Structure formats: structure tokens, C-alpha cells
Image 1 (cartoon, helix red, strand yellow):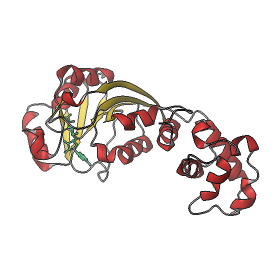
Image 2 (cartoon, helix red, strand yellow):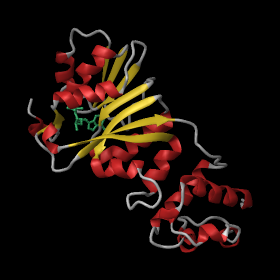
Image 3 (cartoon, protein in one colour):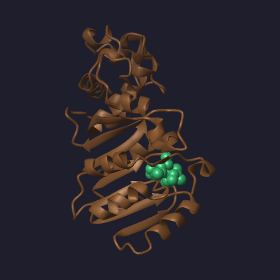
Length: 257
Ligand code: SAM
């Protein structure tokens, strides 16, 4: 099967496929979720190393390809469906060459579900935004939200030539290791709303950005005065994830709804 006829870019570079499977550090008792099995190049390496592999693939033609290719393999389950809609099975590791159009919703669905370790491929720019720290131009809402849930590390950048057909963009493999938040957040929903409002106006000082909650917070005007001037005078891209936690905790304590 040629990827082109399916609007997909399949990873075909053998050393890179090996390195992704190796990075997952698979053991006999691991249950691995693979999202978007495609023609099974990565899947083949997973079933050889893990206790069990569960593949979710949306394209019925590729489901048939996978069923044929792994007909004689006993430690695989192939689920036909959309990863955003199916009930996620129990798993402890996740490996995926993700469809880039749904990188963000899939990642947060996985992070909310919980797992031990993920080796996930993204478009390079997206991967950079996930792993960046304050002061970098790629640091933003995606960095803070991701790092709230997990330690993330960019393992390698991948050239378009590793795929067939070659896509226009570069890719990157990211290691995602979920852990409890590194700081106290009294109300998660409010924390994420503060981050969203702050980076929604990333060139503005927090003093102005925080007036743009959508919908506005109850008694917003008076409670924003409780935030230390030190934070209000900075721009979102200068603040660390724990600073957003401090701000959201102050707002949470002061709420009267
Ligand atoms: N992992 C394969 C490889 O490296 O050759 C294929 C990667 S391709 C970029 C993405 C795969 O995800 C395709 O097989 C596509 O059909 C599948 N896919 C796209 N959206 C999906 C979704 N929402 N749920 C499950 N699979 C999906």
C-alpha cells in the first residue's frame, strides 16, 4: 500500500522505527497503546517487545491491512475507530505516530487518562512548543498545559525523507512521562483558564491579559487586585508554570461564587 493514496505519510526509515520502539523501553508485562497503526511498521516492533499491543486505527482499509499482517500474532488487539471517540482501553505505555491535525486533543485525552510513559511523534514545531521553557518564543499555553501533567523531552528531529510519501514538514519524537503536578493547584479548571487568558494576549502584560477571561470571572475586577504587582507587570511568556498556579490559587481563594 502506498501512503499517498490514503493521504497518509508512513514512517519507513528502519533505524528510526527501531529507535522509537527502543525509547519505549518495552517489557514483557507492558500493555502498549498504539494510535494510528497505519500499515503496521511500528506495530511490528511493538508486538515483538511488549506483553500486549492495542492498536486503534480509524481507516477501515488500514484495519484490514493490520488484520492481515498480524493474523498469526497473539498479543495484539486491533480496534477500528476514532481515538477521540472510542473508550480508551487500559494501557501503561503509549506509542504513536500521531495524525498531526489532532495532536493537541489526542495528547490531552491521553494525559487525562493517565499512563507511565509515551513515545509520541509530532510535527516538529508542535513538539518544540510542548517542551519549551519561559523566555523562549515557542513557550506558550501548550508548554504550560503539557508540563502541568508530565515531564517532556524532545528525543529527535526527523526529516521528511523518513516517510513515504515525504510530507512537507519536519517531525520530532517526544518522550512524555506523566507525574503529579510539581506545584499545588487548588482548582485545575481555573489554572487552565488563567493560562489561556494570559497567553491569549501574550504580548501584553498580565495586568491587561487577565482582564480578558472569557467568560469573565465573577467579581473579576476586585479579585485581580489581589495578584502581586510582580506578576501583573510581566508578560505570560516570562512566567513559569508554577507562577500561573500561584495566580490561579489567589483567584480561587478570593472567589465568592
Ligand atoms: N504509525 C503509522 C506509520 O508510522 O506508518 C501511520 C502514521 S499516519 C501519520 C497516521 C495514522 O493514524 C494513519 O494510519 C491514519 O489512518 C490513522 N488515524 C488518523 N486519525 C485517526 C484517529 N482519529 N484515530 C485512530 N487512527 C487515526
